[in-house]
Image (cartoon, rainbow, N blue to C red; front, side):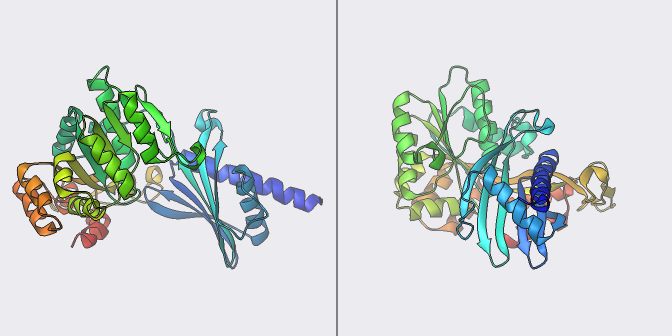
Length: 386
């Protein structure tokens, strides 16, 4: 190996470690390595937004991608095929404890693209109060925790805080129901939670599936079972049966709102009468960027009392952290009647409104009035809810 090649490899290795370390520092969710005609852009996703942090030349880009592939035990000679693997990263910022990473690669016309997903271990599971829900939603979640059976679903797109909410609810249940048998089935296990038996499934657990794991674990005498995600009809059917036979099931589902959850599960050929009997409650949510408390500027407008500015604490963005806006409901009599009516989203929306269930739009606008965020940050959400 020539001296220049060795230097490039060392430089690439150092740069990869540097930007992973900085990702840990700023609590980035993802680190992107995106090839282009001039080399490669390195971008970080912080609070849901991508920021370009560095540009490198083509040769250094190639070496950095190889470094990432080696870290994840990927096949470096198969760069034309998409690949995915796991890696661990340790530094002073991780407390010299290994941080789990998922590294995926994908071929493009300019070279291999890679994305590193950080699985930041929570130093402490946030309490339900600290998640940032409004008081009504927080109260409903606490009520859900004491149910002996049924199904609680958190709905929203990817990256909407569903998994964190599930962890927080499980942590709350473990605290208020001592002696309760709680099991979670996850792909992957993202955070360790005291008092809960956690099971990992998927390709890194011998291909064990949600439905196979759940069928076996129901023989382990659980009272509360958390399932990472309702992905298909077979999993949904097993969850439904468990919820109707003396277990409290908690899970997540990709859906834009409460009516969408019902519609999707009906599309999985689940009987409406069973669904109406099994669902305890649904929380539909999105994450919204929070105004930086150190630099937000008063506007004098009661409908939007603060605007974003930007400072060192928020990386000049004007925002620091995110919080959920949500719509949540129990399975009330009118809600149950609407579910039994089948694919009638208008009737379901009417039932929710009659029960005093605020919409996602209502909660988002209230967050603006309370000075938590700005109209700019909720515009996309409002548009999708029109």
